[in-house]
Length: 368
Ligand SMILES: *[C@@H]1O[C@H](CO)[C@@H](O)[C@H](O)[C@H]1NC(C)=O
Ligand SMILES: *[C@@H]1O[C@H](CO)[C@@H](O)[C@H](O)[C@H]1NC(C)=O
Ligand SMILES: *[C@@H]1O[C@H](CO)[C@@H](O)[C@H](O)[C@H]1NC(C)=O
Ligand SMILES: *[C@@H]1O[C@H](CO)[C@@H](O)[C@H](O)[C@H]1NC(C)=O
Image 1: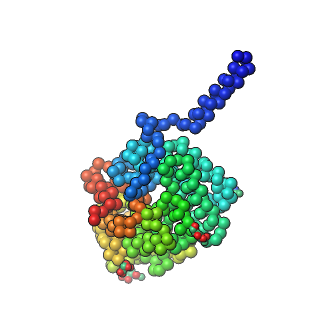
Image 2: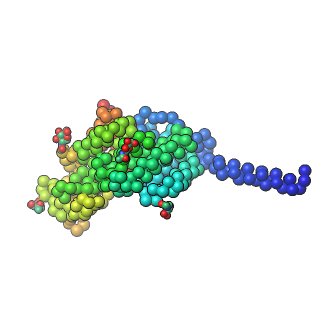
Image 3: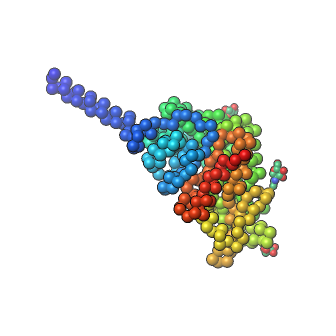
């Protein structure tokens, strides 16, 4: 063998080695089998958004089917979820004006796919909450993005899941005038964000529930009336509430709000502050009202005075209001239920907190 030949062979071997390691990043799990994608279908989805931290370890893993990673990627979470047969998916967000161009769109999808593969993930959650007007280039590009992302993921990662987050109603809420029917057809399912339902208040500017019962259910009726299969819909419930500072709080609990416009509406929940269930359950104990129930909206609320003596009204969801909505998941035959977000409960060892946290997880699957 000549020196030149040996050299070429060595070069070839090195190429193969580096190429091999590029194709197969090493598996971070103790059991390499846990890096395989989760391929099997699940009859009922319990979809959890995780925003980071460590308390995912305390989730009710007997229920969780998918974790959408919105925080920093944690290989330990991936290995653990896979050991429970649960999927772990990427967050996908991109400026729509940049993906009107088909080449740019393909590049973005390729990047997401490479990242998902490198991290042994099972799909992607498209969280594009941008305003879009019907018939614009962005309108068509958005549908194409979902179609092309689903096609690429399904082709390249066996059994992978591609989902899309939508507002509580398809009726151009927050100027999100998307082609919902086409988007639902293209992906595995829509995650319906049945919360922030006061983002556009067109009537009286007063505080109300984050996810009123009737308004929430009307949203599902509207999706289904657009020929969307109920099995393409997962109901999202909030594990947070809104704290509103009242300009005036009447004895019959009418909390008048300062007007903050949002996407064309004169008044919005943007004037309130989002608060976790964990924090509210502590605050309610020292509130002036304790837990109150509003039967039209079928939601709990409480009232307190801040250090400056200003009255606040806090609207939230608890096991009672969530299980009422969750019953509708069964009744309509939806694909499942989920929440924003899994990290918002108190996972400490405090006995009262433990009980509250367990009740919130249980409310997702009310017994008939
Ligand atoms: C492609 O995307 C980049 C950002 O990723 C953007 O700067 C550029 O303007 C886009 N090009 C087109 C033609 O949309
Ligand atoms: C929306 O998508 C559906 C299904 O793909 C299609 O038939 C319809 O023409 C689209 N609507 C618009 C306004 O483009
Ligand atoms: C403000 O609250 C007070 C005390 O409850 C009530 O008497 C009054 O009618 C309210 N004013 C308005 C404008 O709602
Ligand atoms: C909620 O919907 C039900 C059934 O459509 C209706 O009877 C009821 O009056 C509604 N309640 C409110 C507060 O809108």
